Image 1 (spheres, rainbow, N blue to C red):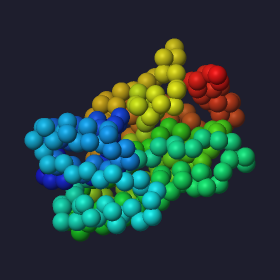
Image 2 (tube, rainbow, N blue to C red):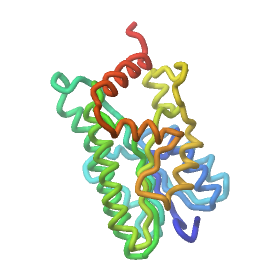
Image 3 (cartoon, rainbow, N blue to C red):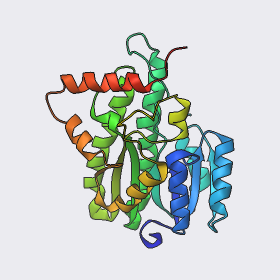
Image 4 (cartoon, rainbow, N blue to C red):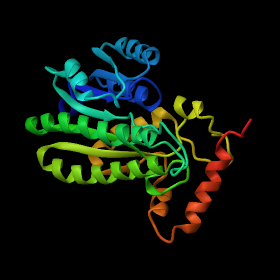
Length: 262
């Protein structure tokens, strides 16, 4: 893996959950790491844990929706040979009915999931193309296969991310750069727990962070899209037609997962 994707990997959203799982697996493979995240506590904890495995680790406490995040990232990464970018920072930071929600809050979802992702991919992707090797792994969501109430913008940006990855894969494969959109379903992460989602519903397919990170790295060369956690059939179903009953059913399932109003 070092020869193809090393010696340095950058993980945006690398402090906890799936991002931390990527950090541990890449450290086990001998890659040095640059971890980017907003929360200093989890960031420092993950950095210490993977540094103990014998790799070099740099950290950057950064909100990727801040103006010109690439400038801050370059201050930490310029001079490093970054062979792998993992963009795992695309969380849903605002859920609300669209017409009564705040446009500025929706813009934040767009800025994180689209603008920041494009900026980092543009910067590191160009360097990888010049070297003729590397990998770009963009973490997506099953939400991007279907519009849903309260998270219509999040679903839309995740659909954008998948289509973007498909086009980027076509552009970069002849230059030795692998591109993969890793599509996640319900995954047991701290962010999901903070949202209060009920992941103990009977029949719900819940993935573990380490499992999806393993799948992503194992299939990085199998782009442009890999649906993790055994959810391929669900993704294929969501992409089909007719969609009315499917959308209604997904809405009902989401309501059952959300915490009851107090």
